[in-house]
Image 1 (cartoon, rainbow, N blue to C red):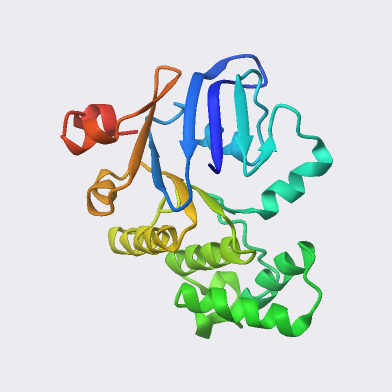
Image 2: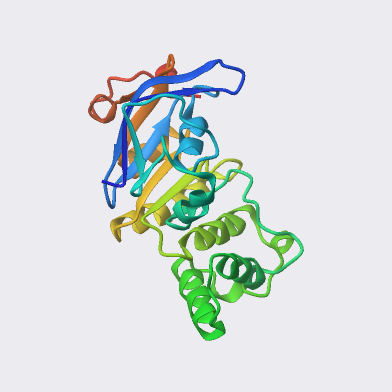
Length: 237
């Protein structure tokens, strides 16, 4: 099991409750949606997974073999190297081209052999159909192309898990569809994917496990969703 949360409580730094009693489990190759209104806790849950937010109380909170209740600050980079993170604001380095963006990540995570680095960059760019964009600067790319580079960056260290916060935000319908299709294909190759979204049509087209954040609780609603028992109002942000 890649993630095992049992009875996890999450709070904002000011003490306000985000989520209580979270039970959340992720296995290899699963494709998981987190849905819910804005402010319901979706992004906060993701942030606990890569230790951007602390878990205040839990019976168990394990991510990729690391106990988040006892993890030390110096261990967090090791945990993050096992996962790929796709941020809502992309966070590409604007002062360097696509190749240098990816090169920077590999060097920062311990890669030293230049031939191996070049090979890995070529591999991930091919996976996202961006092989001809190595020399482009981020500002020369469309929003969808930048998101593909963000996915390539997340794949660099062959992660067991990818977490993506609103990866289709601000993208047009066709481009959003392409991005979710790509992430779905990645999950089918064995990498678990967790993503937040408010786009119901994508859930219909690319089915996965569905969790909903609502009233400070996280509940799995896959079966109910598939049976169309959730209303439009319940599902929208």
